[in-house]
Image 1 (spheres, rainbow, N blue to C red):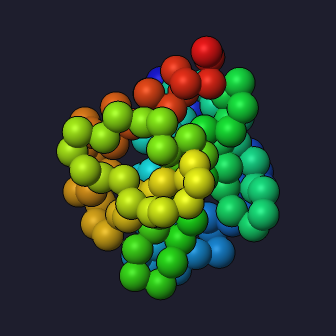
Image 2 (cartoon, rainbow, N blue to C red):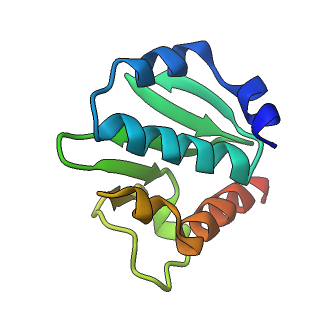
Image 3 (spheres, rainbow, N blue to C red):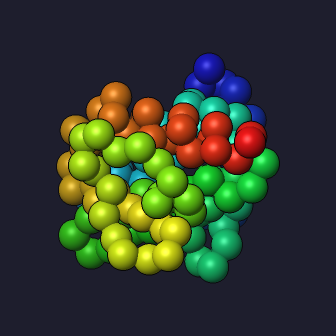
Length: 121
């Protein structure tokens, strides 16, 4: 599966990640891997950040100084029984990732899968 993920990687996203400094670089790499392993998505740098789409926009990865956001374009439509989603936008919601352990949760993967399914409807 990792080989398939590499085949879908976008060189522009590779360059974006290469410029990051720790700890953002490690968090973005882990989120990128999770997104691409969860579902076959197209990735591209849009508006300066990695964006992922499948039948429309699904999510984006946006690094900040002390955390990385995994932003969901249709976040207000997602079930969030674990209370991970934050934000007050019309549709956009995000999950703040502070540590690598935050990426390795079933709840985060479930949000990604649900976001992909929303675009299939």
